[in-house]
Image (cartoon, rainbow, N blue to C red; front, side):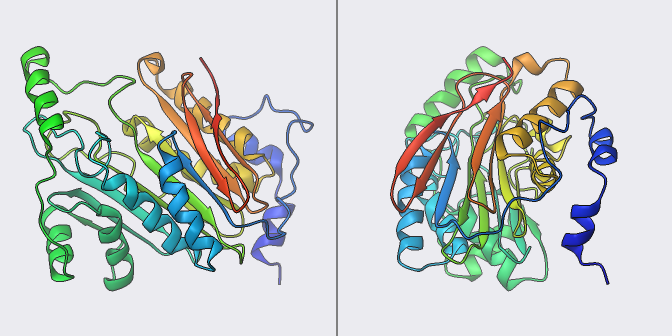
Length: 327
């Protein structure tokens, strides 16, 4: 019987590339072999420079023998609790009615996953997403249902709207006439992928979403395959930026699938960005960036606009990497 890995390796890269809109790639630009499977961990990557703080917690867990799932949860919780970050967790920008709503998802090395959407009053949306994964038969809970699960498991309701984010919202109402805005600046996310010492991968993604969005809006961050995707045979990827564009292309899943065909993490991220550019005439008006790690521990990222970076941390070094971009 042909194994899944044998089947994937033997599949025609040419036909898959054509289906993905990659007909202009030559064989010299990518091979059809999956990445080597030697264990290279522990490693952690996360979006943006503020990911350095998150990585520092995650890598300590990994260096002490912890698993990748615990590492990504505890790592992104640092940013969720940071009131100075206005795009994640406590202190996140509210919707246009003044409500701070959080989206998050988590995925482990076995392909299990959990997600929450439009969650209010709970700082650590990522932990509620893990509860969905481990304590319910579901993948996604939203709104009041997600809140009920959190409270039933001992979490406490809090006011997530800080003075800083409230003042920004009140100022926005004066200028924007109650219309949600889409631009490059007001929708960052922390997405994280980690590999532990056993070579197992997990990922997490959490955000307060697009600032001043319409009530009930959900972006890509809590959607498996869009904001985050992990395949323990191949690698993991996470997205940041305008969620609607990522949702329309299932960007993180696409990144992992391109790595499956032998592309490097940066090449795979570039394909996902190119797909978004092809489908959105207004791509110059918003930012999207992807990060990825393959099973060999190689990492990379790519974005539409300049300025996107990711944090990479191993047991020996810590760095931030400025990504190449289309513009």
